Length: 556
Image 1 (cartoon, rainbow, N blue to C red):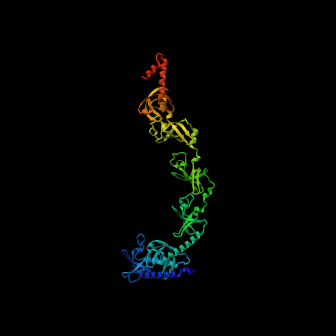
Image 2: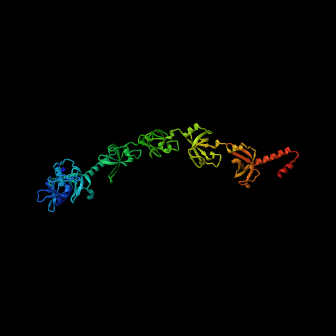
Image 3: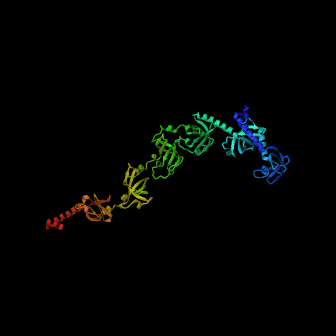
């Protein structure tokens, strides 16, 4: 075991290390003598520090060797400091105080080195040479990593970056610590492969630890390897925000659903590790059932409701209230509120569940029908104006006030005489239970033109009017006081309808007055009969006159 811990591996590793060590040693000879000794600071001039190192001339180093991070001197003339003789410049030895300190740290590390320990360190690459890389840890200990032990494809990308390395050789003679990143990478790869193989063989539920939560899911550690639980694999409700449910460090049960061998990606699922709630309800829940739910999220178009077993249903805005003018669900419900709703659609295959709140509420039409009846006169508020009329809210329900029912004047339009918000008095003229529609009238509250006309005219009165319109079934005639009357085709008598035109004056007798429906009928035929009757009456009243004389007089 001790021999194994001396980091002697296979022949290939030996050759690589020997070549790297030889290169490293050659580079070190060229670059520095690296002899450590005590020196005395004898002078500080500008940015150079002169140190007596017991040689023919003083050693020289840059002033930054004895300043702190703020540029303040930490040593003065006369101080004895450790220096490393690194070479010569212009006949003077080149020395380094910081190099000496690093070498002392390396020596202390080597003296206390425990081969039985793990000996893995975090280091930062600070320089490179032909043989490899120089790195230091947080304690300022210097390590050397041969190029073959780095595992870098591009050495330049490793500069000033931190990595984990493992000590693979201690050279007491050269006072150097040799480390390897490649060995850890290879060990990790081998360990990962073994873990993945073991995990992939496991079809059971595995307990994992949440390592990191992101917007798209969570990374979960399962036996030393991280797998991703996508946010769509957390709940049977659908995609959820993991931050609202979990925190880093939580334990969760997961199941493996996929492993991408090329990308080395492990996909996990939390919902696959739990029973499918849709299997539980597909045979126990039917359309028409009433269930209790909790409002989990409200959107402008509706609300999502939680059944309490990882199933979410949808409550559309149109199913919240019988009020068709609802603008936002928040006007009627709030988040976390418990509601009784009716199931109106359930499809376990597509995992679709729709519910209704309004189906459990009293129907406004039923309430209206119980409170009002046809013929009632009520007050309402104009809610909407259209080209064909106005909608009026009466007792929580909207009825239609059609243009033709708003006024006895056929030219009047609701949008011209009302505005939204106006309070109006109307009469209920029809309640249609089948279509659940209500028809309203305002003109029924006013005397019709026919009613006013009837106050001064009676059936049989002879009147004159102007032809307003000609139809196949007869003539529309305008009388005085803006009153219309109809002469049916069969009542035109001996007149030739084809010879008549709009604007012609015509004489007829009143045949019918319907004050309620504002209808007046005239008859030319009746007028002729009335005149004929008058002639006969005159004959009976005048014995001196012969019938021939009377007829002759009428024809004159």
